[in-house]
Length: 451
Image (cartoon, rainbow, N blue to C red):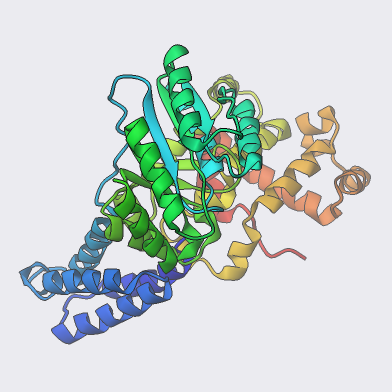
């Protein structure tokens, strides 16, 4: 998300960073550039106008023009106002109510409500240790009931047995009673969507809200809908008091206009970003950090938190003990590090949070993808245990066999061995580095272009 906006604004940041002097004309030119970049990112026009006006008011005052480093001061103003548009600071779920706390999910059909409900249930269960019950009240679409039941089974969370022959309100009350009976901490209610906002849909969501008295009413919006997202969000906010926004499919849109529009239009904070189809793909939304990412300043803090959440601690400790004991970092260890990177959302997801990623040429970015990681894992999988322990025995005939077994070329095997050797040196140097050592090696990890 935000790739196009980041590319435009990071170039602007580069020009401003070392400016020792700014004039009002310089600032006007910069703001025109920012305005065009925001509109191209599909940010709603009223949001763009309000944002530019606030930046202009601060930029032409003492804060920037009288600063010893006016370029840096203007960058800070733009960053602060970007964060303010998206909500300034992270707002978590407010579940401090007598159990069960009800979370009501709403949004249009196809916005990702059902998958997001399951992702949220997984997060609450595994990271917050909550006892969760999932319930679908989408009685118009029996497939949605079955989909939620299947997703619930995958994450080990019970799903309420919705009766499609009863209306949504009756099912919702029964689900709430079941949550109380089974002593659940949280009840997540997935509601019906429509292809467009209509009166019947709004009446149903109002009735469900009145009956369930939810602690949280989350509006799920597809990040790829751009300015339409703002209008839909506004309609829902007028129907029920929204407490938060979830931006789904955030990895599928290069523009990101929805994130900069829905918060301004509804007044409700963006609480989560949903990415991909995997049920692990839901992360807390931090406006200040996202503003830094938009300006290509990176988001290392979120990356560290992600490592903490998703790193397999037991395996990491075993590797650390192995390194401390002076044992060799072999190809099996290398493969395990690659697998853990995939588990964290892949190499692109990691690099996206590092400063300066937007400045990497597109041809080089295209090489940095999960397909390459999977290719490398396949090559190691085609080796014998002895070859993984002692890579030095890999002669020409063995490399040909490994390439044939992994569907690659001998040149690919040679490239992997070179990358492994770089990583082995890094692991020897950093000792207990583990995945952190691998992250330090990332800038030169993929070498030259593929043949």
